Amino acid sequence: MMSARHLIPLMAVVLMAAANAGSAHAGYCGAASYNSCSTSACSDASDYCQAQTRCCVPKFRPRIVWEKQCYTACKTVYDHVTESIPVTCCRTVYDTCYRDECFTVCKPVYTTCYREVTCNVCRPVYTTCYREVCCNICRPVYNTCYREVCCNICRPVYNTCYHDVCCRVCKPVYETHHRDVCCTEYKVRNETCYKDVCYTTCRPITETKTIDVCCGEWKTTTETIPGPVCTRCVQDPGTWCWDACSCCCRYVPGCCRQEQVQCPPTTVCKRVWCPRTEQRTVCCTRYVQEVKQCQVPYTVCHREPVCVTKRIPYTTCRMVEECVTRRVPHTTCTMVRECVTKRVPYTTCTMVRECVTRKVPYTTCQMVQECVTRKVPYTTCSMVQEVVTRKVPYQVARVEQYTTCKTKVHCVPRQVEVTKTRCVPRITCQPKCNGVCGSSCN
Image 1 (cartoon, helix red, strand yellow):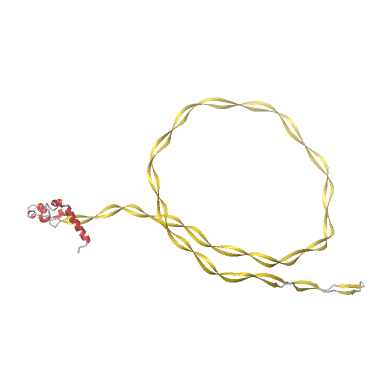
Image 2 (cartoon, rainbow, N blue to C red):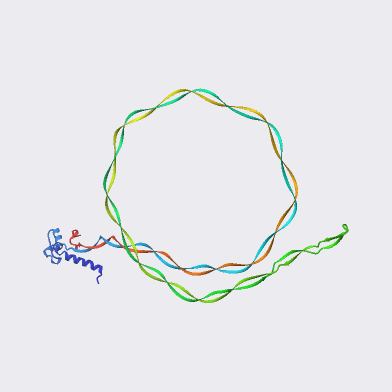
């Protein structure tokens, strides 16, 4: 069976032969085909060139020629469009609450007491005395005197004169002209398109379930705390002894010793938390995600060129000469001699001797003994029971919804025309001789 690649060239040759039936006389040596060629055309001839022309029996060989062809195709281009989608989320928020709790504490109360102590101290007493001292000093006495001095001075006298000066100046003259300029401006055209966007929402579902709750109650208990052990000083009883020197009985105090003494106990009331577990029915809300679809508009901008003619002004400047007369001032100076009398001051100094008496202070110190009584503080401590209330924090959970924006990027396709080049095969028939015709049939 003949393959398709061999069948196509043969079909092309047949179609070309049918289309060129009108020119068959020229292509087959003047006949409709090679079968109708006359016998006299293939007979012997005396001329070799004539015999070569008459006996030429060409054969056609198909040939494929590749030609370049331009065509327009559509290409898909994807534009990235960014949009913000609101998303509702849930989070657990813990609120801090406080409850009052009372308990008894022992608060120390400190009291400051004073006892008097007498002692002798020496206090310095300072006395300031003065003694007179005589000394001679010289005091300067200044006198201001004046003397008259005559001198000649030259005083300048200024006069202002004017003279006319002619000069030529160039004054600029500005003229405004206009010229037409063609420029291309771009007009922006906005086109609104819509696209389908899928977003996820949370739908609340309320359920009831039983949970174990830890609760309890406060019970008041009484506890006795033994008092602290403190050390105190105890003096033994004294005795009376006979004193032969004074011929009387003298009391002799006993010895001092330290012993440990325990203070009275303290009763403390405190509250104890007794926990227990209870089953409670609680309504819970859970959220199920659902996918919904909506149409989101987006804007596509197209720029269209527009040819605009603008009238642009421009300014030309030309210089015009003018003759201007100006009055130019000039100043003359004349020196005038004058005689001036001035009073010149001068100072004279005279030293005057004086006797001055002044008091010079000096300090004397004397120690005076005195008896001083001062109070020495000491602190006593006593325990006082007090009921104190404090706030105990605990956490309460609740579900809070909040909305956030999620950024999503979509690819929007659009068609763009692109010019491409491709090679198209074309079949041509090239004549081939049977070997008798020679080089003229190649």
